Length: 222
Image (cartoon, rainbow, N blue to C red):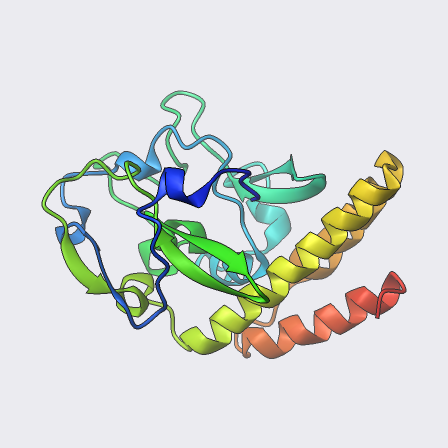
């Protein structure tokens, strides 16, 4: 999700890498579910998230839609996001006790909070979103430990590739100004990277790369 803001207004202005220590840890967020409530449609899902959700819940993307996930338009493209409760406005995966029912395979946005990513010069770094988490007395933790993602280097490479693809698609949509074309591209994007089932017994990254090649070829963008 693109944010047209000055990073110095929403952070301390510092950039961090995965091995850096940052003061964001909150003792396991005990007694707090602030970031899981009133979050609207902001928890946008990427293919790695869907791979983990379908694996963790033993289901497929189509079965998630309408129950845990819904589609919205983000920066001109159709994208899936976590469905919120109509009654409480909280994440549909939040238990009555205020705990995450999918914590071990939660989406990347959830793992990242209260960090953000800033993309510059063909790569990205992390930053702390100030005033996002109200819990006091935070302690330091390494970013890679906070994220808790296996093969983090492969994940970061994937994130950059996915971001670059979306930016490329958004640029085409903006330049052409054709809503029908944008819709058609979004449908192909959804089919290739979300609807088509992943083999959850196999490595995600190689499957993603194969889909990337197919997607670019299918749109004549390779």
